Image (cartoon, rainbow, N blue to C red; front, side, top):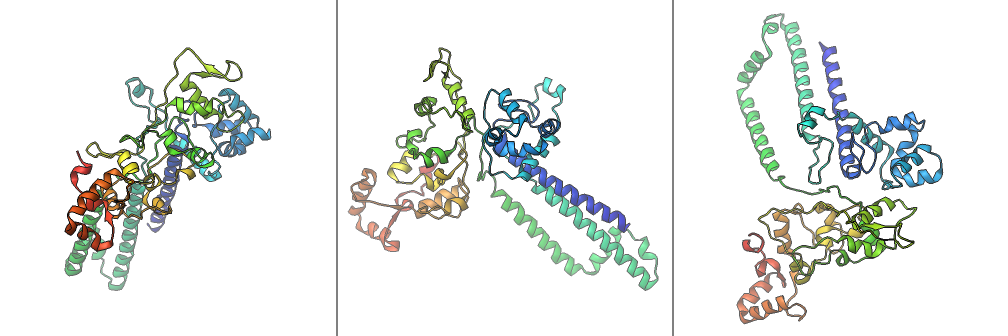
Length: 440
């Protein structure tokens, strides 16, 4: 029996480790690959299922990790015929560089892809959704539930093993075989009743613990930190806003006059990319997507030109999604409140990928940001910020707060009340905590 229990425990640990690696591969696939690759279908890039085997069959199985990490460098080295063939097959569309991925992480992605079952043709015929298609709003599922299940099974195995040893020791010490005739449940009831005081206390503690876990889990509903949907074009903010110093307002040009920050039209992208086509660079394939959307053809002379046919618009996936009953106005915060973009969105000059919902820990690391404790995009986050954000009034620079200041001066008692505590006026003291300010 002991040998069987050890074997069972070993299998549980093996399954747990394999599931953890599979979950890591799934997360990496969704965040790095899903915008261009599908599992079992060719798309912008080749399907990932069987990709490693195709490189092995070509005699270059050891080079696929180099291809994923920096395909441009691998092609330039001339060490891989397979890399040149794939590049030619997909019309010179260059894959993004993922130098941050380790060899193990690349293999985790490929392991995950190879482990996915193919779509049932009958289900596809009936209109079932493609299980390999990644939607922008899909929430990544972690393996935490499975981890707890494995731990519970291991705990039960340990209890049964200890119970069996305890029973054998009791029989050996007393010589009474009746203990072998009792079932585990009968023995448990006898022991629990014998030590009913301890059993009651343990039961109470476990009940309270379960209630605490349940209620804490309710607070995680709709917490969207680290949410980063796939996008039609891999847009590196670090290159545009960081290296090239492009002001945020150039692309998000409605941020100072509308509730929405706005997304740049393809024509805004073309203002620069008529001249910058990325030839020979890793990002040339992404720029070609912009050309396709604009209807731009580089064959029309050296400078290119627009085709008569219409382009295909880029459909961006929304990142910062608020409930329908919540009102948020960008211009009110940016113009009137003077809030810097990095307070909510983080330092985009360092963001090498498209935008995501930055966790509060990352936002608090940025110099000049108000340090908050509640999760990003939650109601507590907004309330906490309104309670800490200082408002400058009476300096003649902001007509909205100047009017509030002039009204406050007429009620000196109220004015002194606000300034007595900390010597400053905060948003909540000017009505920033009123329900109707943020809720329809």
